Length: 382
Image (tube, rainbow, N blue to C red; front, side, top):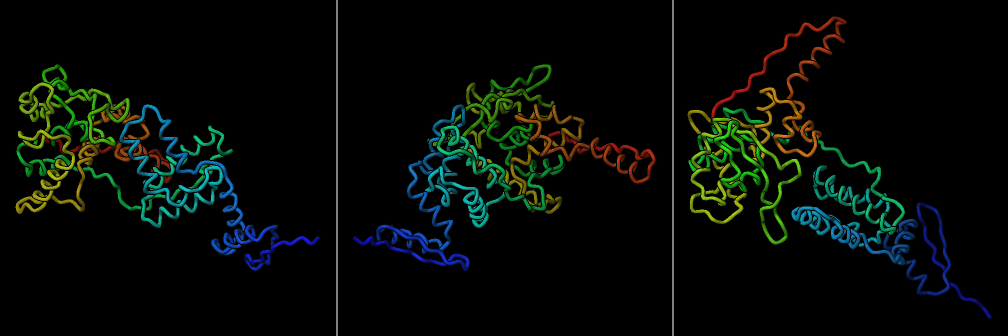
C-alpha cells in the first residue's frame, strides 16, 4: 500500500533544488542530464525537451531547405552544403523547434574560436536565417531565432581591395609571358571577372563596330561534378562592355586567331583543358614577383594584389575619368548599386570636394573658397 518515489537533489548557483520521479530510470536520466551540463537546471530542462522532441534536426531542415531552392547556381548549392558540413557542429543535431537565441550566440562564439572572419560568419548566418525562415513557413517552429542577432564586426584596419595605378599594372604586364599579356590587357581595360574572361569565344567580340565591345553571356562556375560554363553571376552580369582602342589593339590578334567556338584566353597555344583559374593565378603572381625584383624599376607594393584587384583598379580608373557609380555598376555587372557604392564610393572625387566644402562652411561660417582640384589618373595604353 506504499508508493515508492525517487528524488534527485542538486545545487544550481547556490540554490538547493530537488525533483521527484516515479521510477529510478527517470531519476537516473535526470541525474545524468544534470551532470552533463554542470547542474545547470535550464540547460538540463532544454536537453530533456530536445530528447522528447519529434521535430527534425536543424541539419535535416537545412538540407531540405537546399532541396527546395529554385534558380540557384550549382556553385551556390555546393557552398551551402559546405556550410552544413564544416560549420554546423554546435547546432546540427538540435531539433529545429528547440534551437534558441542562446544556441545562436554559442554558435557565433564557436565560429570566432575557429578563427572565422566576420564576413564568413555573416555569410553562414545568412544561410541559417533562410533555413530557419523555411522551418517557420513549414510550421516546424513559431519564430526565427536568428532575428535581431548582432554579428561580429569586421575589425580589420586595411582595405581588402587594392587599387593599382596604370603604371603599376603595366609593370606587371611587362614582366608577363608574352602569351598572357592580352589577358591582362583585357581585364584592366574591361573590368571583367576572371570566370567571365576565360569563358569568352571569338563570337563574343565586336572589335570593328563603331564602338568596339565584348558581350558577356556566360562564365565558368563550379558544380558538384566539376567546372562548367553557365550563365553569368547575376542577371545584370549579362551585359555589353565597351572596349578602348588600346585594348582592342592588345587583344585583336588573339581573338582573330582563335577558332570559332574555342575559348580565346588559354594559358598556352597547346592548352585544351579548361578552366584554368589556378594557372592564371599562378601566372599573375609570377609576373608580380618578377616585377618586384626588377633591379632598374622594381614594382613597389606593400602586399600582393589578387587578380580580382585588376577589376578594382579598372573601376578606380573609370571613376577618376568621370564615370558615375550608376554607370560603373552597369559596366561591372553589379546586381545592386549598393555593392558599387560600398566598394568604390570613397573614390568619387566630387563627393570628397563637397565634403571638404561643407566642413569649411561649418567651421568658419563662410562659404567655402576651396578650389576643386582636378584628379588625373595615369592613363597609359596597354
